[in-house]
Image (cartoon, rainbow, N blue to C red; front, side, top):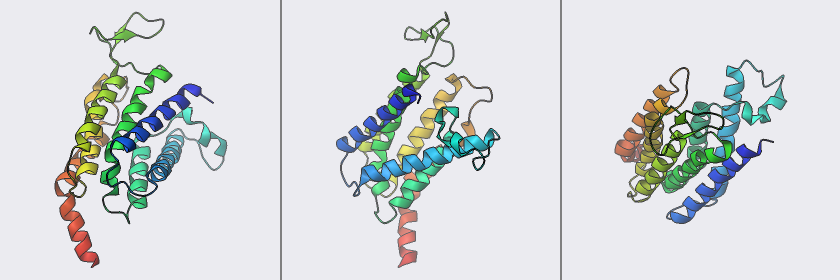
Length: 224
């Protein structure tokens, strides 16, 4: 077991729990269970996607599935998390909106968990708050902490929004994607990272926040 990763996961869980306590309005029953189920679904799907990209067959190498430090596809995990959360709350209108600020806060704490994993640093920087990796003289941006701060502020903003259908959920998706997109250039990457995915998620979040209530109204009208 890689305990630094475990501490980061527990930090994210603590952030989500705090978020549910800070913004308890209109939460569905068993909100914690729903979030845990969505998180586990995202983790499994993300790990399977990473294994496939590495040429590892999960059917012939099932033990590799639990080696999380071997990599998890962020894109696949995010899509699976969102899909699972939407599916499990489909009979509870507004549940995704109610849980949105807590999810953002949990994501912020996950990024802050880089302190446990010694994985906060990105591109070189001479700013006063930059610091160097152990054994290096090059100071770098604490990019994961930038993301954590942005997500905390985003959670506060989302928690103050109204209750129009999909407004909070769309805003949370857009904020999370936007912060990742803005901080991506500061992360060490050979291929520029999944910027197109973040841009797509940002666009989808904006569309949900602006037009989600109309889509929801049309869906209810169609069903009735």
